[in-house]
Length: 392
Ligand SMILES: Cc1ncc(COP(=O)(O)O)c(C=O)c1O
Image 1: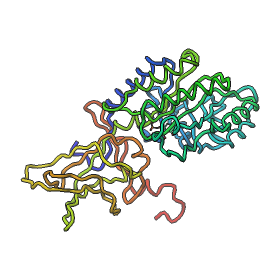
Image 2 (image 1 turned 60 degrees about the horizontal axis):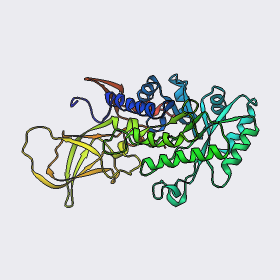
Image 3 (image 1 turned 90 degrees about the vertical axis):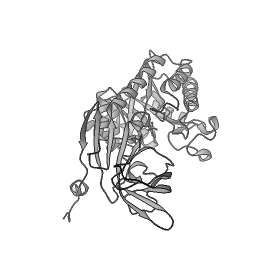
Image 4 (image 1 turned 120 degrees about the horizontal axis):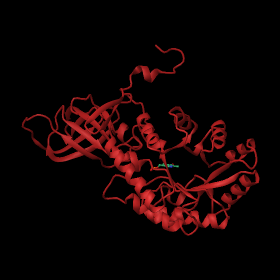
C-alpha cells in the first residue's frame, strides 16, 4: 500500500459486501418485503453506484443530474426524491413507474401532463419530529423544510389535489436527517406513517423511511434495531405482503468502507506550535468542516530516533489556515514520508469536496488481496473539460 502515490481514497469492497448483507438480512427478517435505495448524494462515485446497482439496490436520486447519472449507468430501478427535479425527468420517471416522491407544489402542477387514472406517485411528509424527539433534529426549533406539513393541513391539501388529478398516492416518504441517528427517530417515522395512512385512508404500496442510519460501527445501533422497531409499528396498519418497506441508506453503507491515505511532506516549527504538513486536506474528508475527530492510523517510517513532543498539529495542503485535521499529543515526532490514514471517510466526502488548489485524487478498490485503480487523479484536462473559449 505504501507504494501508491498519495493522497488517494481506498474503497474496501469486502467491507461493503458484509455491510450490505447485514442490511439485507435485517430487512428480510424484520419485514421481508423491502427495497434498498442507495443514496447517490452520499457518494455518487461511479464505481460505488455501479456496485450498488449490481447488488440489486435502487438508485435514490435527488436531482435531474443524479437521475441522468443513474440512467447513464443503466440503472432502471430509481427512487426520485428531492427539490431539484426537472419537469422532463419527473414526467419520464413517473411514466416509467419509478418511485417518485413529490416534494414541491410545482411537481403537483406537472401532473396535469399525465393521463388520469394511470399513474401513481408518493409524497414527502413533513411532520414535526422535534416535538417527538426533542433536541435530536438538525434544525431544532426552526423545524425542517422538506415535504408537505402534516400538522397544518398542507399534506392533506396536497394529497387531495394529487388525487383530484386522477393520480394515485402510492407511498409516503418520511426521510429525516437527525443529529443522533437513533432508533427513536424511526419509531416516530413509523408512528407518523401509521397515523397518516389511517387518518387519510390511504392504500399504500410503500412506506419509505429514508436514510440516516448508522452502519459499520459496533458501538452504534445496528440495522436490526432500526428495522425491528419500525416493523413492529408498521404491522399495526400494514401487511408486509402488500406494502414494501423502502430504505435509502447512504452513510450506513459507504461511510465506513472508505479510507484516505496521506503522506507527511514537511514539518514546520514556530514559536507557538509544531505543524505537520501533509499531502491530504480537510477539504477532501471534512468538506463541511464539521468533524472534531477522525478514525485514523499513523504509520511512522524508518528506524530514526524520534523525540517525544507535547503537541503536533496535522495540517493539509491548502492555503487555508483552518485546514488542520487533528492534534497529536505527547507522541513521537512525525517526519516527512510518514503516513496518516483516515478511516470511515466514505460519506459526504469524495463527491462533496471542492476542486480547491488540487483536483480530485486517485481512487482504488481493495477486493480481497487485490487492489485496482478505479479513478486516475484528475489533471488540468478534466478540470478544463467543457470550458467554452479561452481554454489554453
Ligand atoms: C432523502 C434522503 N434520503 C437518504 C439520505 C441519506 O442519508 P444518509 O447518508 O445519512 O444515510 C438523505 C441525506 O440527506 C436524504 O436527504
